[in-house]
Image (cartoon, rainbow, N blue to C red; front, top):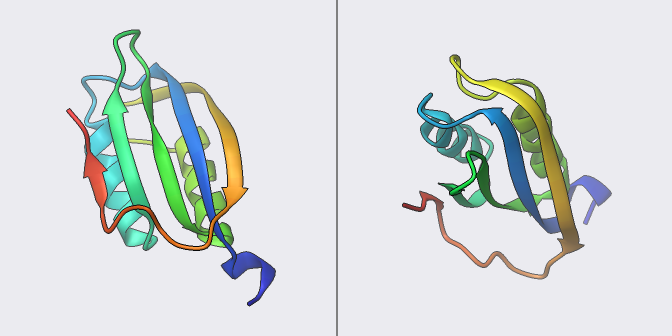
Length: 99
């Protein structure tokens, strides 16, 4: 398996104006477009958090999207990523918005 195809899992949290601007919906759509699985949810302190899983190259593209693009009305200050690790299989079958 090529390096970019290794399955990875990474947790993320995005800071800035990311609630009330359809950030979760756009995150779900972009994750699905890239063929990733995982979840996204609002936090009580005004951020959005979640987990991404899929091929390393696509996860890294999604990380870049979370850091720089987001939804059209969002304003991203920063995105934190942690707990990146190689996995043998995906823990999810879809990309979900968690309420």
